[in-house]
Each structure stands twice: as structure tokens, then as C-alpha cells.
Length: 141
Image (cartoon, rainbow, N blue to C red; front, side):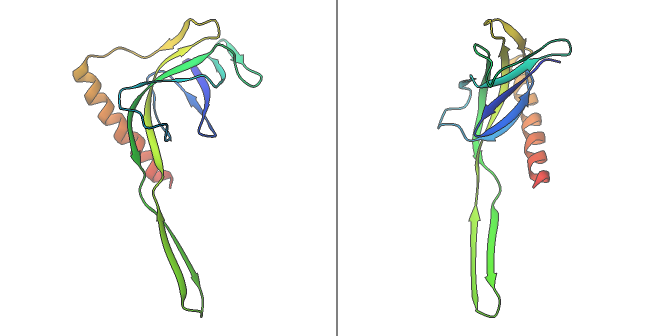
């Protein structure tokens, strides 16, 4: 399996072609818009590996924005005992769901590409994948 390690939102992600990721929110883009990540730290497969110092020049990862949204509310409750002092705040972090389409090598050729599906199949697969990703994220917290 070929993979790439990209950096976005101050975090690093190991991605594969046709993988769905939940990352920090990108700009206000419309769904099904193409995104390019040029901060590729490394890429490779079972046999070969290319590591940058710190980035691999010319390598990039192409993705498609599925949707922008907000996570569930995280409550922040502070209480000072015996002082009748308490505060309650909530926070909903913004996120973007993206699907990795292609991984390009430093020479510009396609290193890895996701399978092409028909529109009917895409909708079914994406809905299932999105539910899995969102379920995993809520279980982590």
C-alpha cells in the first residue's frame, strides 16, 4: 500500500488513496472542491520510501472536500468551592471531511490513485465511510 505523510492544521497525517480524513477546517470552500496539500513530509510504499528534509519538493497530495462541519459540544465547567462561583462554557470545533484522490511523486507523476466509481456507488460508499469516521472521532473523545 502506498502512503504519504502530509502536514495541515499544525498536525501530521498518514494518508492513503481513497481514505476519508477529518482535519482542522480549511477555508470556506464548497463541497466537491479539489484541494492540494503541498506540504508532503514523506511518501512511499512497501518497497521504496522517499523522506524530505523537512519537505519533499515537488510531491503533493490531491484531495476532495466532502463537507465542513462542527464537532459535538465540549463543555467546560469551572467551580470554586465554597465561593458560589461557577462558569459553564461550551465549544464546538470546526472540521473538514476530505477524501484523498491522488498522491503525486516528486517528479510529478502519479504515485497512487483512488479507484474510480460510478456516481451511485460513490454516494453509498461515502455515506458509510463518513459515518465510520465520525463514529471513530466521537469514540476517541
